[in-house]
Amino acid sequence: MKVVVIGCTHAGTSAVKTILKEYPGTEITVFERNDNISFLSCGIALYVGGVVKDPAGLFYSNPDELKSLGAIVKIKHNVKSIDLEAKKVVAEDLTTGVEFEETFDKLVNTTGSWPIVPPIPGIDSKNILLCKNYEQANEIIRKTKDVSRVVIVGGGYIGIELVEAFQASGKDVTLIDGLDRILNKYLDKEFTNILEDDLRKRGITLALNQAVKSFQTNENGEVSSVVTAEGEYKADLVILCVGFKPNNELLQGKVEMLSNGAIIVDEYMRTSNPDVYAAGDSCAVRYNPNGGHAYIPLATNAVRMGMLIGKNIKEPKVKYIGTQSTSGLHLFGYNIGSTGVTVGSAAFFGLQVKSVIMKDMYRPEFMPTNEEILMQLVYEEGTGRIVGGQVMSKYDVTQSANTLSLAIQNKMTIEELAYVDFFFQPHFDRPWNYLNLLAHAAVEQERKK
Image (tube, rainbow, N blue to C red; front, side):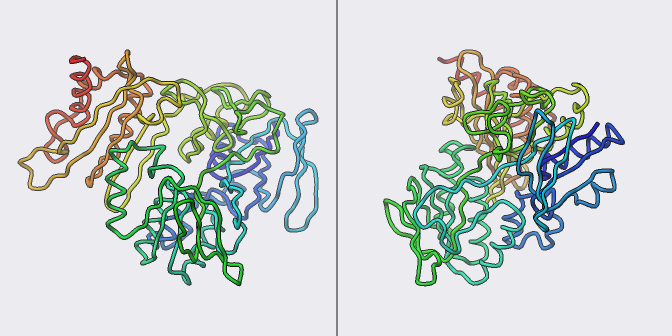
């Protein structure tokens, strides 16, 4: 069997390793445009902020490792076209400019995503950067040394982590977002209100509910300010973090996709063409809170889906069980975890929900130290099925997001979570675990209606 893999970050690396483990001797050719593989872009803010000193730690594989396993790895090669009927690709060696064809029996599309670059006047000015790959991370670090005012456009995870990194290094930081709250996809307002207040207290300028209208430049063509409908914000450096889009131009019109270009795959990672597999940020995922397809670019989804390609490349063996979009964040001392839908996002996914929010201490009051937890449970109206949850504390309660993720995965109800068995030990929790108590509040809310 001859396999061609296009793109080799999370999903591609996972697919190649698993194929060669499950089916030794498979002829695999990997095409990757960059000069590296398996870069953990989720670590960029830590790298920029100096927490990660050695960037080598941001890679969990390399071309030599894949070659040692038996793969043919073509770094700095760009696939220019795919012919699914003839089962071949045309690729270009970016170093020499030479083009050639490669045939395949199975094609693995793990081309990932790319930052969205909105068509804003001045977007091509100097010192307006993207934040996705290793090269861009290094460029950000180089540029940061000579600037004092940094503007981040986009208040998602990457944007907010960069805000923390730049503030910690003494920069004057402004965060601009077209939505009215930071972390809008992951947290409801009761959580983001606290975080926004904390950011303002630290001297960070928040320009929320403001769309960028233009970028102004100086006489050298370098960005000097960012203009919104509400004001103008001085900038020596701007980093765009407004979201991602799937990299699927090569398969446009050749396999089934969502309207945004994300490839639709079945439970075995097969596209609408059974000889073409896809995984990672190039794909839609099965979103368990509503059972539909959604575009959720996360490294966790990518590595799982890539492994499933490896398991199923010859024949369907292991089914994809879907995702809850579970994530965690550490921000200025707050530990934050979320999974499933928020109250704000539920309608978008066709769900009618109710929720409870409560605060509690994570362990008994007699312990010498303690921390408060803010937590929310989101459940489907009428059924009580858990479809989302959020936790936040100065104590690390983020693993509770994984527990709630499992509850969503297994279609647990609020009553089941209320009485599920959790251990008690005063160092860690109370006789009733705080998730039990959160579910008790939801049950009581339903009893009183």
